[in-house]
Length: 69
Image (cartoon, rainbow, N blue to C red; front, top):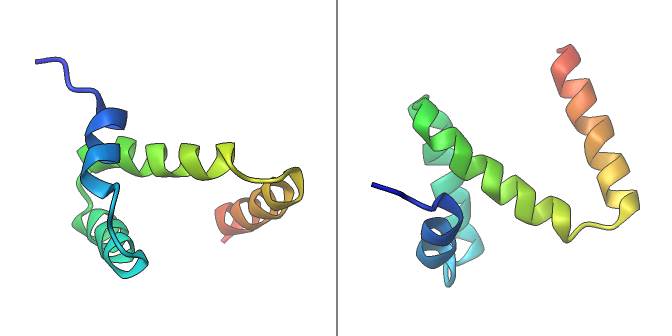
């Protein structure tokens, strides 16, 4: 079976509210299931592609700090 995660996620999450999206993300993180990581990665990819360089720089700083904790 050839599953395209990007297409599946875009279809599933296309019309969700911010609260529903937050619940989906929280559920994926709290489940500790590794097969959900690519989906979270795709959400990050979408966010990254639409971010300004200033936002990317701030996000990189936050991620770097998180990795040091």
